[in-house]
Length: 422
Image 1 (cartoon, rainbow, N blue to C red):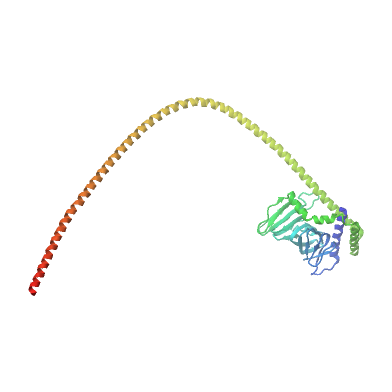
Image 2: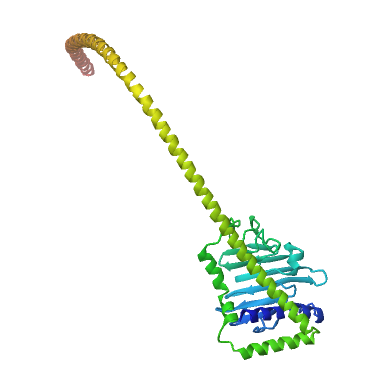
């Protein structure tokens, strides 16, 4: 089953390169690649895609729920689109003679898995994937990205730095206007959110890896589905062979290319397994070495503590003896000091008592003086009040006498006037 799938993918790669060499393309419809495998319903703006269909520049590929597709580009790059995804090929420039070119794709939503081809081998910085939160710069590797609402997660799959096949180590530069993060260790990931710099590179957890694999589950089911009949597969193989013959390819060339691709895939898998096994061994060795070091350190610490305790006990015994002698002397000194303090306290208390008595006497004297002053003031006030009463009476009497005299004088004048008139 797996051999059949790898044969099909190899054949489709050959179709892609042959089509690019033979077909004359217009600017409006520039060929980019071919659909290698498909599951469920995958559409563009104008048509529903099937295995073997051609993909053109600026076409929007939409995979529905439980669907997916694998597109084989003309430079042998592989774009695997997961379920609920929307991907557009914005730029594709490729010169098969020199392997020079440029690839720019944009993921609006969903998941995209990229395996770089000839263009990335020639220039690792020539393949970029644009996402809503920034850009992903592929450097000759295999990676996967998931675009959700306001967040993009990117996973580097491989290969590693010191791979056994001598392949260029893979890396992905995750960046935007606020910063960038380089993923250069296999199965490390970074996240981007709107308005923030990319997060730091972290090792992916099992649950996170399940999410990435789940997005591509539909396509795996399509490849390994037991419901597909052998007759249909044979018909597909016949059609592919006919197309290859019409393009001028011979059977022997096709077989050799397919075998080479299968061998490369096997070698990659073996290399990845070896790398993982070597890493596990190295980790185990490091863990063992660290345990031994920790044990030795603990033993040394214990020995040091014991030695310190012995020294401390010896010093403590000497100190105890010295402290006993010193304690006796201190007690005698304390007794003398206590007696002195008591005598001083008694003197101080006597002085305080005397001061208090003197203060009380002064207070009593002040009170007496104040009372005397108050009594004297009251007497003076009484005297002052009485004197003005006599004066007032005299003044009132005088005034009355004057008033009486004036009235008598007026009456006399009045009588005189009356007498004159008569």
